[in-house]
Image (tube, rainbow, N blue to C red):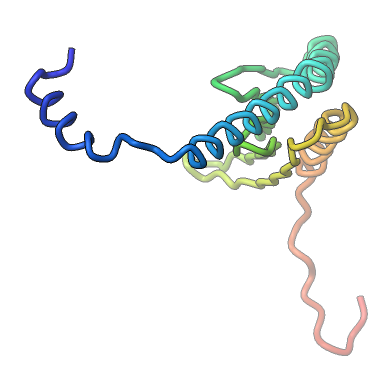
Length: 166
């Protein structure tokens, strides 16, 4: 419960400012309507594209005994794949009011605790219009390809003096 003395003071302070011009309220209503449209586009994209694609991938990972975890928090979905000395995570979220972001994090564990290196990629799509389902499949494939490509560590390039060939 709010303190009565505080409420009395607060109401006294804001009373002269409570009249709001109709134009300002109309702009607020328009912004809310646009936000609802973005939310509908994000929800439709999740239900029609992301969830089916992730579900298909999870079935494949389970069948092939690849350790993984799918979690949700707030408006985001995260897929993490664990490998022997590396893990990758794909986070899908509505990061701004008008866009959806795919954040790709691939982490290589070092020999000592805290010696990790990270490879991050981020792709953002506009939610002003509905997104095609192929975006979800393309992002999952990009994520999986980055995890696979980063498994190969090449040694340092040999140093060749200028003017000489290998």
